[in-house]
Image (cartoon, rainbow, N blue to C red):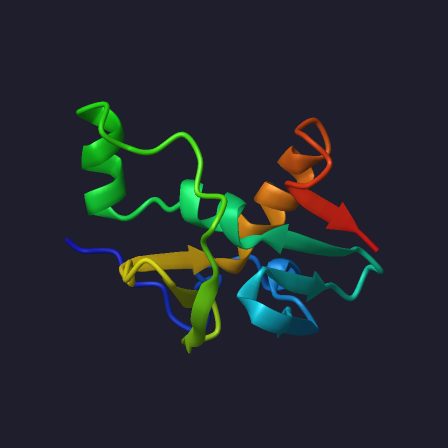
Length: 123
């Protein structure tokens, strides 16, 4: 016999606390500035976002060791919402397959603390 829960809502498939209050594309598409309710504000560089894309194409290129180590001249060309849980980011090199969940972007900000200072800049 199948179990059916009634009256108990399923938790959302994302962390609502990871959704920023504001997401602003920097002039020239050099980065994405994010601000959360808890006061954290940071800018992820376009290069960092491009190099951390997790789409199937980029994942395959990493496995086949064809993924670039740097993307210094890259810019974010477009940012589009994907429901309430993510954004779709298109880049100046024509790559437009990446979906970046808000929780992933927040993790990239946290991770960037240990990386070079231009990876993410806290405001």
